[in-house]
Amino acid sequence: MTKAHLDLASLSPNDELMPGVKWGKPEWVPSPAYWASILSEVTEASHGFVSPNASLFEEVGFCLLGGFGVTAEMNHAYFQLLRDEGIFDPDARISAAMIEEMLSQPLMILGRKRRYRFPRQKASRIVEAMAKVAALPRNYKDPLEFRKLLLEIPGIGPKTASWITRNWLGCDDVAILDVHVIRAGRLIGLFEEEHKLPKDYDVMETKFLSFCGALGVKASLLDAVMWSEMRRMGRTDI
Image (cartoon, rainbow, N blue to C red; front, side):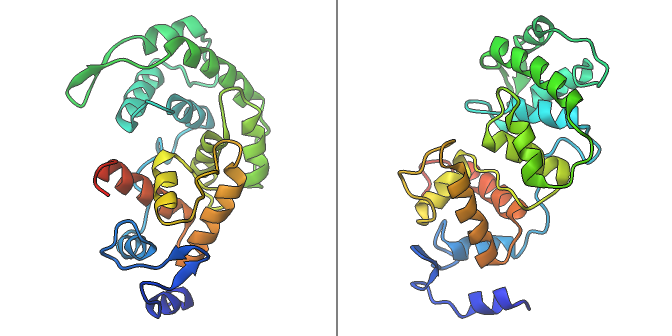
């Protein structure tokens, strides 16, 4: 048993795990104790990755296709369509018009025909991103420096850059702060209401990584579990 586990076992519900963040009980959703209870039975993140053998072009394309109003299922469906057409091949000769045409096709997703939002805008960003990825240095060592390079690509903000960095480098130096993770953090007092993205991403990420350290868990595991659980519960369940 690790020291983190010994410390957690000694906490009472009203003790603070971090300033302003009470420990709670496993049955109190979504308290730190609740997350610790779930994480005790989870060893690997189960979402957010293209595949273990994906290229950087595929990782960037997959993550770029996500965003506000795009469900995980839609993200995967349109990524597979574009990948199967060779859009993410390193030597592919693609145009924004080609991608826009593909993204404009309705796809059957969870039993319903759905359309991708803003296909023209996303098509242009993917074309530009693929060109930028081709020019990136291939000797990646520092996750934070790699993320800075990704942030120079139009259409990639801190969440998407962190997502690509996590997938590509398999690191725990960054956090993927999407709407579900942020909602969980606000409910337990980890994030303040005045903190907004993308302006306060660094501040919120630092708090989240400290929270991971207090729980004794990897950031890659906690944000994946939070994403999955908060998405499953929806806005009306807690």
